[in-house]
Length: 376
Length: 222
Image (cartoon, rainbow over all chains, first blue to last red; front, side):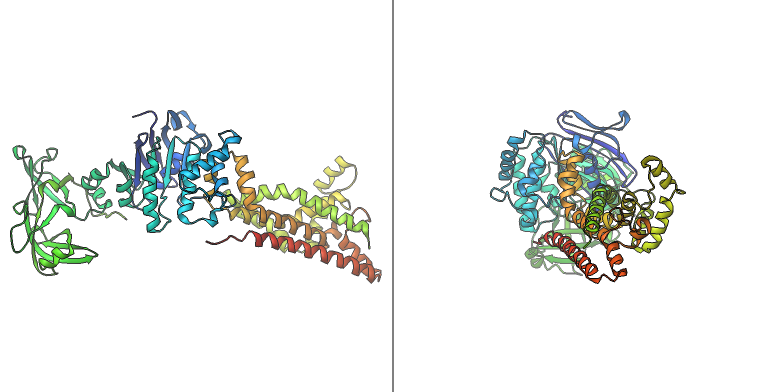
């Protein structure tokens, strides 16, 4: 762990239970995601020192902000953080310039105005310095909040759902601006968001939080494609999560064989799972290939399963198809194809369909009781 | 026109406002944000002067100020004269019966500050004192000003409590409101009318100030 990075290990019971931890390297953007009420914002407020009750350790940039064993618990003023609040929390009686200057108390008085103007220019707000927050649009207010957070020359930048309160077009623009701004920022950045697409698009790594606990930390690709268990799979909105039993391994072919309610599947080699153990497995919608009716399709011999179409929903250019696999206890396998492909193959509710589950796309996970569905 | 009574009234109102400004800021801020045991009880007790008949409040204050009351005895030992029927006694009574007029508007003003604004100021590195002076006070100022104006106007007009605790001593406890009553009793309707008009004008100015601060702070919606 780089000493200039942010290291967080905290636990508390009230007001929101937390038992979470992560590290964020300098220049890295870590997204804290999870369903509403999972403690994302509370964790962020712990880091900023606004939530005072947590135990554990928080260190950043070589300074210790929290160490409950040594009775260290620095005030927000003594922690060098820049925090962008969900609704920005701008000072309504001050101009954009005044808002940014308020966070420049650590610099000599004579340079504050110049520095505040520079920061506002860096977030594309030159010319609007004298406007009050009520005279700015949502996107402009967010930029002022960002400039104010950076004004403190923070050792960590914390963003609490900064894109939730703006319209879609503005949000896309702000995403690009953040990506651009990041290139000049050397501190760890923590972004709280409930939007998985946003997290996947902006973050270097994601941290999945559920009921205050860290479930998995990894690159967006890793977390979305290779969830740690079935709960994470559900939380990242994977549709195809099933149970199976491991039959055996074929190391030479780099394959593991599993039994899915009587259907034999070949999956990517998962040596950690001993034969006979119960597992969960998942496959992204992109890992399922619909067989064409007129001629053979790519990968047709790989885990072919057939069933009856139970769901067929076209949204925009894509059709989501749910196939009930009779051999596998009528489990519902969901895949997505371009709408014209679904049309050409005559896919409709009630017709027979055949698909292949690509072995390399199947991810096997340790078994977890899934009856208690996540309250997402 | 009893100029002495007018001066006394203005002095009493000014002193009351001067005492209730810090008291109101501290109490209003605490009631707005602190969560402590007995907070509701404290709020209810502070609202009591609004509903209590002035003569009842005056009666209890007079009992406390008398030489048999602890407060009255302590004051007499220190100052050498009784608290009842003195300007000091009148001021103590005035502060007490004005508590809700000063504290409640200030409490509402602090409560109206958006929840994350103070944490945001702390995250900007501002010290608690700077947060109070640069963020909280400017945002709560219209409410604070209207509290002070209401207190001022209310003190000028208070009659029952003043009569009970202060009596009618010229230059010491005879306020404008008492002087009007006094003149009416003596069938001097001209003087009474003049002083009543004076109180009416002062009250109108106070109300105008209180309302204009609220108009100015109506947020622009965008």
